[in-house]
Length: 427
RNA sequence: GGAGGAGUGGCCGAGCGGUUUAAGGCGGCGGUCUUGAAAACCGUUGUGCUGCAAGGUACCGGGGGUUCGAAUCCCUCCUCCUCCGCCA
Image 1 (tube, rainbow, N blue to C red):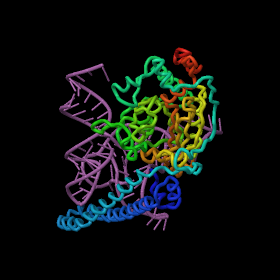
Image 2: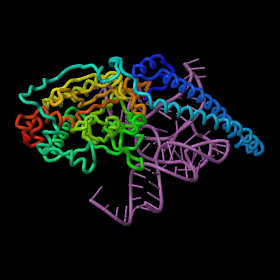
Image 3: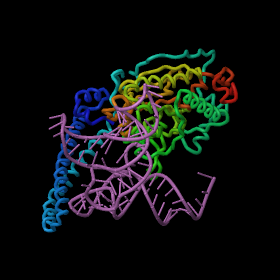
Image 4: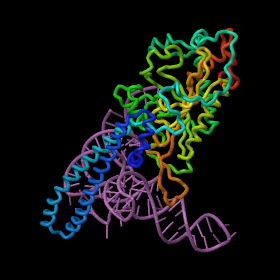
């Protein structure tokens, strides 16, 4: 959520920044108009209320004097004022609600370093880490290898749940567990506190995290719509401190969670229909940081390097791309995607997304801190929040199976994972 | 699911229609004392909105109502606690 005061104080900067994200000028003008309406109606209601408070003080004196006739007369004379306040309050609340509703549909402002662009083709490739292996045979797709080795069954998944579900079995199930464990241990070593959050959250939690109202319809909800199945553990982690006033010395706060994620994939019909790449349910280890505003850009680099080092430990080649304005996620000011090499398609595919949401989520869920320096002023500020995957477990299985496949159809297991999986080879 | 009880400032806790501009304590900050620190003592200390400012205004779990006036009375929702029932 943007600060509505910025709209009135720096309208041109906001217009310029949001135009980079293809927000129409007319939308922003309407927003500014709403902010002004809200301010004027609030001022009116407050000045009426000030009159009422004065009158109320006089009333108190009158009540003490015990003059019943004067009391009755004064009471009657306040009826008009009372009605005027009621009306002004109503107007003011209408304008406040309208402004909030509009603000909820506006994304975060892109950072100056984010490249302009309409879609992913204009993302900026930052660097490559690791070299794709050369195969002396034609590499197979993970689902062919996996099904042949009895690690996964899409047929069984479809029996009970339909398309985009999988049943992992034997080494497949164990590999998912081993990867999750390894990633969580890595995250702990990087200083993130492990959290096991609720997987069902209320809609206000979704809104705080920036998912609602924009992405209503992309998640699974219970029939009574009381709960939403989390589309990512970013949602519960972003709500851990909602309403809190933190002290600066508590920051940064770093959390990690290993949870299933549930997504409808509404707009993705026909894409990635085979394999583990795009399922309605997948597991992910998430990293989440709360920092002061001056540290958040450094924290974003830290997130990327933490997620990247897990790929490096697994010996998987990847590249880092900086998302362009058109590909940037709703709540983010800047996002780096980590893309892992997939031999079967001879391309890099997203396996992690690391974003700095600045104060966007913190403003929605009211997470503030009190700065230590210049305690005399003691003005509270919103924290910055950041999230990144480390990593998407399903896609990591894809990368691992494909990059470590052998000519005989077996899969070699990278050294770091052997003690978690209990074997150095799946055959 | 049924019956009770409770939610007050960063934290604990008093208040139960009009000096509440929310007592008191803890914590924080400043000071006195001290070689320094601790202890003790003195002072100070909520958040948001609005305004150039002075100021104004709201906030006692959320929302609504009664009243000239609500932390205080009523309704409703949420959360926590106790007891009963059911249950992995």
